[in-house]
Image (tube, rainbow, N blue to C red; front, top):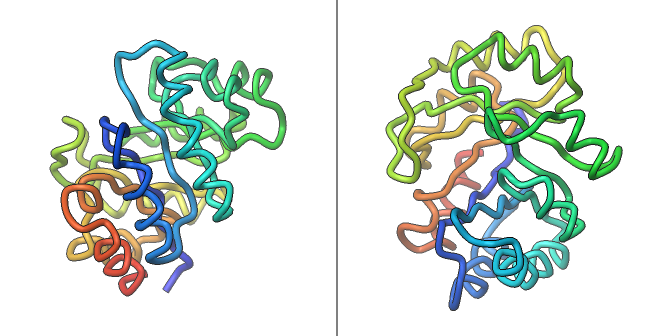
Length: 202
């Protein structure tokens, strides 16, 4: 069994009681990273919402990664940024955020995009969506074989994403995913129970 870790992605609504839910989730089992993912809001508003969540992560030594926005990651002093295709270049993020920042890149089901990201200096590549996801529509549907291929050739960690649950994650872990990125499987129900269920599988 490889050392596969949990990478939580926030729901789009992180206001109000979400901070308590995040605490419960992070206290329920080992989580390596938390990605702050909000859409269509200005940076001030996003920063206000992010700050308490960032503090919760910092207290538990969970990496705090900002989705899509290099500028917001820089403003918050986040641990890193996750770039979709079209959210900016790895080099630009590295320059803005420094050598220590964790920079991840969405590569869908593409070996080519993943190799490009690795060459550009990404700290991890994300493949998906492995299963149908209610969080984000994706026409890309890679096979676990893609993870096996990546692991056989490259040192850079890979993240599996998309519709992953405690029930269906085993083939991805066996294929060599370093991280499982999950959102709906945790936030659509009892977050603490879900994190415990993943911890048992990992």
